[in-house]
Image 1 (cartoon, helix red, strand yellow):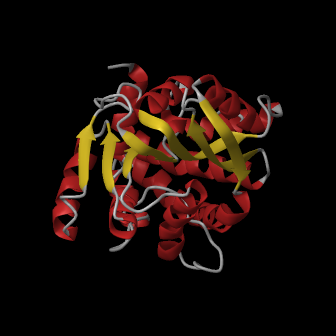
Image 2 (cartoon, helix red, strand yellow):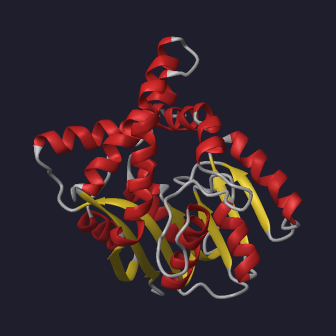
Length: 284
């Protein structure tokens, strides 16, 4: 297991309580930002709306076989199974997430249309050409070598299959020094080493055999979600510092809080964007 892999697992283990308290609701089990539009004007609605938006952009059809790469605790997988009659295989390296997914699948009556695997999406335990769609929502950012993900996604997709990704993307490879440092320090708090530019994502997808590659800047839809998160983090930063000094909260938990502030500020200041990439695997 690489040090990066261990860092990611440790991050999600340490911040499990934070997500349970600050993000999840009874209907929302997704660890991602929300899309605000005419269909959604509250947090729970907006987070679920991200699934609808991604599915529409990728043209997801009922009954398809979908891989959720970086499935978290199953939010998108359950939405796809319930709303698109899909069979969804979710993959995550975090053991407690797999356990939660399996428990929720049984509770929701979706155990026959979902499966969850503890594994690495850079080396997946699936045969070639197994899926109609590869779905990745705010998860590929964790990969140190994102080209490896595109190649693995291409391998498990059927010819003509689709990839749909929601990702944090740079406008430019090099930002002004202060913004670069703030952004990278922020993402470090989320166990993310770096993010790539839209152009870099495009060329990695092209090199991996994808065609009809489209990258949409969806920042306008998630800006409210980022603003809300930033406001709450700043409001509770003082308490976080006290709890850290008392060793009630860990360095990883506090890094998550502080990192979120840097991430949201650099996003809202226009240094990077929220991209939605769709592409089709070539048939050759």
